[in-house]
Length: 145
Image 1 (tube, rainbow, N blue to C red):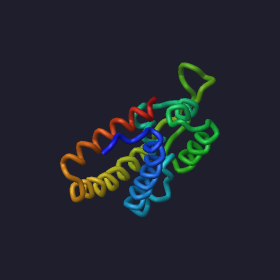
Image 2: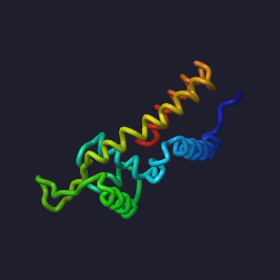
Image 3: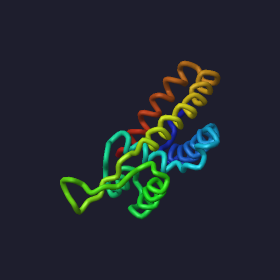
Image 4: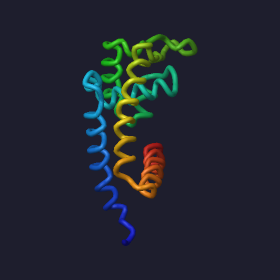
C-alpha cells in the first residue's frame, strides 16, 4: 500500500469523525440526547480547566464568540453553569460548573465509552487498537495546532 496523500486523508477524516460522533450520540442514554455536542464539550473544558471566560472558551473550542455565547446561554438556562465577576478583573465574567453540570458530565461519557469499548474489543485486532490509540493522539495534536 502506498502512503496516502494529505489531500486524501483530509477528505476522509472529517466524514469519519462526523459519523463516529453521530454514532456515539445515538449510543447515549435517551435523556442525554437533548445536549448538543458543543454543549457537552464546553462543559468538559470547564470541568478540566476550571472557571473561565466565554472568550477563552471560544478560542479553545475553535468557534466564533457568538456561537460560544449561545452555548453558554443554553448551559446557564439549564443550570449547568453559573456566571460571576472575575475577582481579579471586574470587567470579565467567569463561567463555572455547577453540581448539575458535573452530574451530567459524569453520566454521558460512561455510557458512550462503554459502547465504544465493546465495539473496539469485538471488532478490532490488537494491532488496530494500537493504530487507533495513535490516531487519537495525532487527532488531539492536530486539534491543538
